[in-house]
Length: 201
Image (cartoon, rainbow, N blue to C red):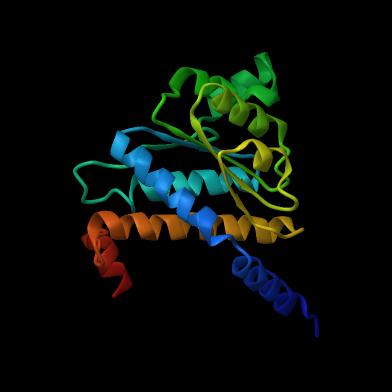
């Protein structure tokens, strides 16, 4: 019998055990800083990292904000396909994230680049643009961390040489941050809405 499942599960566990808890705390504090300042969190990536960016933005739009008078503003830059394709076609794929940041980015914001290798050029360029404009940057990376680990103000590194495990761990990281900010803002029993409560009973 194949031991693929056991090997994979063990690698996920090992990677989670090795996460730097201080970097998680820094990420949580960065989210709270932006929330309190009324800023916007921008997140983006390619492929599976882009899916994680979109998932996280949706979670903070609804789950971490429902029931609050003041809500999180979180935007996934790879969700706007028409603008992304126009930039890729007319300017270049490496600029698909930096260009919208030029439209939107403000001083109280947080720019989160997600890249398994840490070396995706379009992610690196956007992160560098934010850093050059004194906007806080956060890297979610895997493997050896790559360029974004070196340039980001905060880096949360899934230290594993495996793309699938990296992607899994990145979503765990976002969920940890979401759980903690919800606890801080809503207490131990945050309301997710009656329809959610009915589905999970």
